Length: 123
Image (cartoon, rainbow, N blue to C red; front, side, top):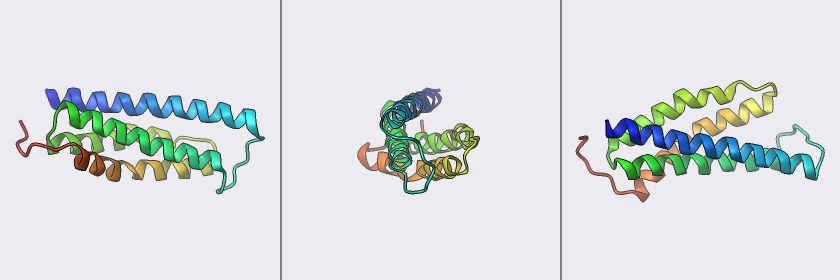
């Protein structure tokens, strides 16, 4: 049960950070320049970086609550399942960047395992 609580907590941390960060980055982009949808847009790069940081924070949260390899694996599966909702965008560039962000879940979770020492027993 503790793994479920840890994974849910990690997903909540990731979700809140992603949505809050996207909202803030969007407001800054509207205030500073007219929004363009080129691949080299720094707004999209900042959004991708923020999503990677958010996923790392979520994985760290899950690993701190229940430091076991199964927790990190469950976080990756949960993020892949719930994070796939990010792919429903109206802009192809945003969809591709969200897909790239979704691929960052595994490296972020692996980095979390390096930062947080995990116990080898599952329960």
